Image (cartoon, rainbow, N blue to C red; front, top):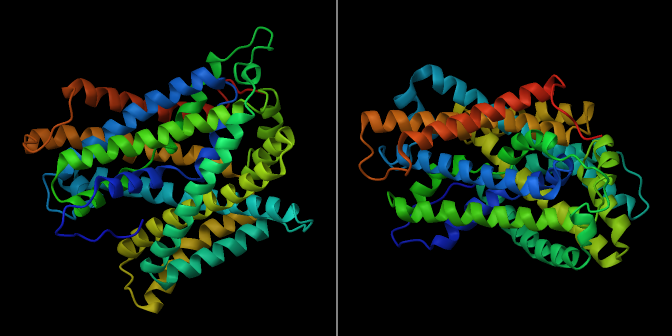
Length: 414
């Protein structure tokens, strides 16, 4: 995410809402219909609502703790002071792990999307090399400067929003109620597959690293920042629901088994939607949107990882220093993309596992420690200790679910 400049005029709430919404909504949304196909529509909506509620409040807990420190204080500063070096190390490792895993996920996703796009032009280009080339382009943009990333992200984000509404407005017209409600299924089972969806939902509501940046943007104005978090996360929730209606209302539940079997990558899902829609215009819009979605997510995540590693290894901002940072940032996930090009779904899931630490467990512990040390005089999240316990349970449950699924101890829809 680009560094936000502090201004003397009171910035509009719209900017903060777009920062939060733009951070959350990305290529990760393409994984949702695939991983939610077992639980299907209504249980998936329930999972999204629960996750939205918990992730909103964990973000507000970060805000509560952050307000007791100077403007510009990072996650690192607050965690080290309130929870000690041990928790700060765990938190730092989880942040690095999430950003590396997501960078790999978007290399995988970009390769599949470019492969699918070129395939429509009768050009057969291997997905793993397409992802590698795209990663090199992004690495070059990130190496140039943060301003270059910011400008490119603004262009891509605007195009993504435009194509989103054009694409999903068209998808909604083709929704079949019988398909969406799975009404033709005989003795269907949905509930056993619900728990599998939660880590993916958690990974799809990640914005917590932006909370200190919003305080830098708006100053110590908790009510304005609170509204940014509420409306930004609500915008993402609504768009996710529209996406589920558009995808699950067009692709029968049983067809998702084959999509998941092929790795569940973006090109497979877009190809399945294209097959049932029989609309060249919508097909083109889907392809364009998927390209912009991957590009914006890729730029945002890699810039975050780049800045984090530059600070961690104390690389300077000279061309040589930025080159060193770029090498550390991009080489590990690029190797992963070449060796295992179809790991998008798995990578998003592992990001959800690590994100439970810094987006759920640590925020709850920060709020508890902050109240004990400072009393949280400026702002306090409602619900008292019960809300803190709820967020902790949510985080631990997500971690347990992912570990169980890794050992094939949870039911899988197939």
